[in-house]
Structures are given as C-alpha cells and as structure tokens.
Image (cartoon, helix red, strand yellow):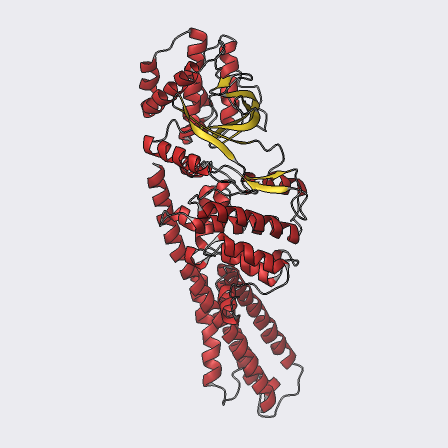
Amino acid sequence: MDESEPFPNSMRLIDQVCNQQTRDWQAGRQTSVEQFVALHPELSASEDDLFDLVYNELQLRRTFLGDFDLNDVEGRFPQFAQRIARQLRLHDALQSIRESGQSFSETRTAGAPGATTLGLASGQMFGRYRVQRFVGAGGFGVVYLATDTQLNRDVALKIPRVDDLPELQQKRFLQEAELAASLEHPHLVAVYDAGQISDVSYIASAYCPGKNLAQHLRDRGQPCDVRTAVEIAAHLADAMHHAHERGVVHRDLKPSNVMLTSKPCGDLPFTPQITDFGLAKLGEQRMRETSTSLVMGTPLYMAPEQYRGRGPTGVHTDVYALGVILYEMVTGKPPYEGDNYYAVANAVVRGQVVSPQRLNADVSRDLAAIILQCIERDPEHRYANCADLARDLRLSLAGRRVSIRRPNAWERFVQWANEKQRVYEAGAVACWLGVCMVVWMTTTNVGSEFLPRSDDLDRADLAAEHITAVMIIVTTVVPLFLAGVAVLRDKIWGIYLGILFAAIPVVITILSISEDPVVHKTVYGNNFLARFLVFTLVFFTHLLLLIMMTNALRVEWRERRLDRRYAESVERIDDSGG
C-alpha cells in the first residue's frame, strides 16, 4: 500500500480505497481492510463504506487465492455476517445465468453510493436482454443499455440493490415496479417489464438518451425562463395525476428523475418524462440507511412527513416534490439547503422558506402562491391532487385567476414576523438605538455648555445634570447596546435583557410626561413643544424596540419547539434506519 500516492479528488474515498486495494493485490501485496481503516479512520464511520471494503477484500481473496475463509471474514466483521451471505447468494445467482458459454464478470462501479456492485459485461445475456454497455449508477443500483432480443428494442435495464433488504420489502418493490409497468402516458418513461431472474430483481424501461432535468439546470447555471419552468411542471403534474389515478405513487420525484427527450413538446424543445417508478421505496430505504453521509440529492425533495415518519406517503408527497422542483427551476436553487441529510431535514421540518418572488422578480404572485402551497409543511394544506396543480399552473400562464386562496395581509404579516431574520433585526435596532442615545446625550451635554442658561440654573445644577446623563448611559443605554450584540450572537439572554432595557424608558416616559425633563433642562427649559418631541421620540423608538424584542422572543420559542420536533424526527429516522 503506497501511502504517498495521491487519490484523485473527483472520486469518493471508498472508491479510491477499493481501487488502491485492488492494485495492491494485483501487485502481490495482500492489504487488509484493517490496514486501510487504520490509514483512513473515517471509513469506519459509515457502515456501507466499511461493508464495501470488506466485500471488496472478500472478492479479491476469491479471485487471487482461488478460495477464501468465510468464517474468518465473518469473525473479523460479525456485524456483516448476514449481509455478506446475502451478497454472495446474489453473486452466485448471477453466475448461474449464462447463455452461449458467457459468464458474468465481477466489476466495481466507480462513483456509486455502494461502491461494490455486481456488473454485467458487454454482450452478456440477462434473461432475454443482451447488455450493450454500462450507463450509470445510483443509490438504487446500476443501469445498463440493453437490447430486448424478443422485441428487438433498446431498453434501460436497471438492477437495484435489493439483496440486503428484508424479503417483504423486496416483494413490495417488485409489486410497485410491476404496477408501474401498466402506466402509459407521454410524460412517463414507459416501464416494459419488471421481475426477477434467478432471484435477481430488475426493471426494464424505455431508454432515454437525452439529459435529465438536473443536468439541464446545472448546465444553464441560472434559473429557467419562468414560462418554460411552468410548462415543464404542468406536464409533470399531468403525468403524476395519471399515475395517481392508477394507484401508483412515485415518492422520489427529483430533477434527476425527469428525462428531457429530444422530441419537441408544444413550445418546449424537448419532452419531459418522469422515470424510476418502482425504485422510490427502495431509494427511500437506501437514503435512511446512509443518512449520515448522504449529501444533496433526494433529501432536498422529500416532504416533511417523510422525515417525521408520520402518516402515509402518497399524492401529497409527490405534490410537494413537484413544488420543490418548480421552485428550483424558477429560482436556481431548492427552497431548503444543507450540508448533509440532517441539516436538510432540520430546514424542511422548520418550514421557513423564502418566497420565490423575492428571488426572481419574473415570478408572479399567483405562481409564487402555487409553489408555496405545494411545499406547505402540512399535507392537508397542499393541493389535493396533481390535476388541480396542473390546472392552476396553466391558469397562471394565461394570466387568469388561480383557484388557491392567496394569503391575506395578516397572514403575510404573520409569516414575515415568524422569520428568523426578525430576531437579528431586533438585535441590530437595539445596537443602533444604543449608539444614537449615546451620541444624542453626549452631544447635548457638550452643547449645553455653550447655550445661554437661565438665571436660576447655576453650574452645580449643570454638573448634576451631566452626572445624571452619564448614569442613564451607563445603567440603561450601554446594557441595551450589549443586549443587541448578544442577540446578534444568538444568545437568548440578550432578548430578555433587551426587553427589560427597552421597557424602562417607555415606563419612565409615561410616568414623567407631565414633569420637567430629568436631563438637559438647559436645552429644553420650559419649552413644551421641545419637551413633547423629545419625550415622543424616546417613547416610540423604545416602544418599537420593545415590540421587536418581544416578537424575537416569540420566534426563539417557536424555533425551540421546532428543534424538539426535529430531534424527535431524527430519532424516528434513526430507529427506522437501524
């Protein structure tokens, strides 16, 4: 094992390590899993990555030594005993599928989430399908371009990684795949066949050689034209309504599952088609199994109920995903982002999203309302079905009134007040008001030295007035400023402090409105108008800050409630994934 040899940055660590281990064995160095884990301790943090490395060594022992001691491998890694046995059974099943003396070859698929997957060689027969070439891989397994020898047509042959799932889930996967094969719609990629060959599950669907929507958005590097985005979303909604009417739910809609074929469709230069029906449940299970390391992809398009584990997933789940896809098309980014699965889950459960109209001025109020209704946290508040969504999308294109009720002014205000940004604004106002108070009182104190004084105001009174001003600054204004700084640094005690020191001037002003000013008599004297203006300014600025701080406290309490819900969601995800 050459520790000095750099790994290419474009490859995942597990792929790099498995490739290095293979090169070591080819060079006669029988490096073990333990050696690589000692060199890269982070591998042990992911159960899937560690299993891939263990299985890679097992296959290398079989290839180069002609045999291997399964008990030895299971003794070193007892947590993988059952999983290794299932994987070997799948491998043996693939080896048993032969035609014309051809055999399967064991290959690694670089870049796949599960680094070790069983591959088919070019020209190999899998049942009635002749493999042409490898196309790609994902969390579900591998995809090949193949030829259906009975019907003489190209198909996308998908072999999912279901070998290590419980038997009941494997059966459900096949049932959903077979049900998806009954769907016929111009915006659905046709599923021709699904089943098992020698216990190896597969799905054969129409082969779409074009880009998918994710690649299209990435190549553009900017939001789609709003009209184009709405037309795409309307077609996808039509397709999903067709599937829902026949009892098929996708559950894993995302841009990479929307193919853009070369055939024009209306004003579009391509035809959007949804693919990967039947793989959704499998993808959802895979995502939970690898939730600690998964970045981007499926979680961005999952509905809150999928994270929470509450209630069934169904039509509302697909409506949510369509809303997220449309949001991303018109703004250039998804409504929720995060560095990992749990960060995205936290954002989705909180449900705070910026209106797409604020990110793209070309988005109309009606379209923004449609998108926001699609991605409502509560499934009952979303569109009841995709047909209603498609209808509203087309109405918005035509400039006609859509069916959904727009939020009234009060609802928009509540939504605005609930945003986390309001907390930081309260902190900023507290700092600004503190600085203004210090500048005002200092300037007035200095200026009073040069103003004509009344005969009854001697220098001792003026000194006492200055001392009073300094005491007010030290005991009230400075703490208010520090409270604002604390709020900006996400310290909740700063909010409590801000409420206290914003309330003090309000109360004092109310109690002393009819009395002489406590400070700056030299400036105001008996001038009622001046005194009224000063009292009014102090009262309303601090009252506004008091309201803002009180709202900030309410928002923080709300955030903490959401944090508790999020923690409960994480526990349920961990329980279901474990």
